Length: 372
Length: 243
Image (cartoon, rainbow over all chains, first blue to last red; front, side):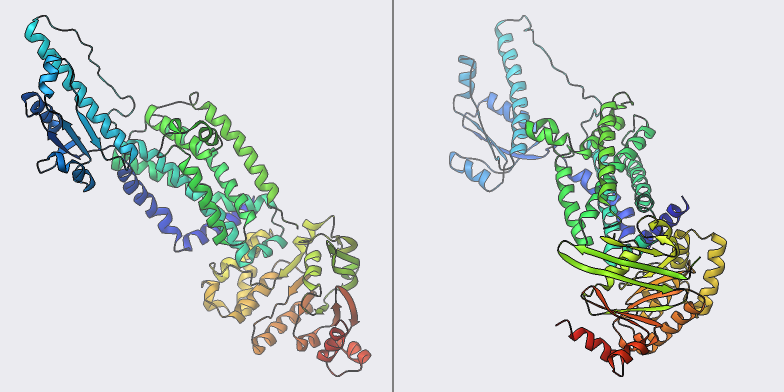
């Protein structure tokens, strides 16, 4: 025990003397949380649109007004003619162009059926999908209104219709920051657990002190525990910092138990730290360790559901995420923070990550050979 | 207990088909300075690694301070000091912190660490820099400190693997004074070196050629048996025989 204490003390001294370490620990969380959670949003606002109105009727004006009144759309300047519709999109003046054909009103009134054309810039496919969705909603609303008005002109009896109202649970305002902050905090914990821990052990190899350590009576497990405890503590500190920033700066609620978050984070860190340890046994320099860790982290992060929902990945990719500890951690962070899930709800995550922890620590200890 | 601090019999280490150490047998007495000489790749480092418990021998026997190198590696580690070719103190810790750390992991009581580190810093004349980071000290001071840290916890034996590489002659001289002092206190010193003038300082020498011990004895005996005037000529004579 005393040996571990001496190693931990030495590690802490070295970490805090490392000039690049302090900014990583204290400044990076702020930057990541503030910049990433504000920038990484799928919500689309202020989409420029324009209308080519070939009908110039009262109904086509009404439809235009509907779009103009929407908070998502801004009408761009300039009149469109048949000739410059494509130009408008090519020059990026409008992301959406609505073409209202001639006889729009006439067709709608007489034949009960009319068509409009939507031209959407689809370079960014998912954005185009969202724009189309917004536009469709406006058109549906317009459609219903138009029908009711027309029918009522002939038949004073009110037409029955189903109104749909939405209530978004757990994130009622669909605030993207609320969704991102738990995930990015999980990312911070991962970065400390995986990258810094693996580099710290490789550093001893690189400067040759590991040789000296190996001839001392320090036992394998003492060195490993002593080296990893400081990063365990710093990562949990980072988690606390992330949660505080989320609470104080973004007013993100922590509905569930904060202790449950820390408990799960501790389990998660055992996995992350042992993966870092395994990486350090495969590499000889900090540079190699950094490259390998980045490679693994990029895959872990992209497959974690942080930016893109796991449910919308193809099945084979979803299967891969079953082996991704980051995915479990982010999921639990969101569940506990936003939904207030209790231990029973995240039991499955706990069991899977525990198995992961047993496997990864045993493999790390097996890999870390003192005698060669 | 007997006076043989290191005793090896037919110690052999093979890496695949290559035999790095071939049946080496020697012994080192208490307080003796034993020089281990040989060209690069002759097997010196392999031998030292086996004796320190970093590498398992393929065959043969050896005891260090009475402990068997197969069975009692942990006990051996408590009783030996080791200084490698690479500088092995932490550059981002201070003089005092390095001493405390190594004292701590060798399980010395805190009080003893404090007293002995104070004495050591005094002897080395490092009082003014004791709270400076090691990285800021000149190489000569670092090497002397590394040696002192290597023997900080032990009274038995210290292994020095080319300890004076890259050090100027004056500092080397001072370094050897530290070695003599340790030997006077009864610590056996096992030292590998490339410098033939250093070989003359050793009590006894073994010359390794291609993994085998080609000659062993006091510097005087060796010079006499090859009928040459210096250790340098002895080395050339033996090393040439291999090519």
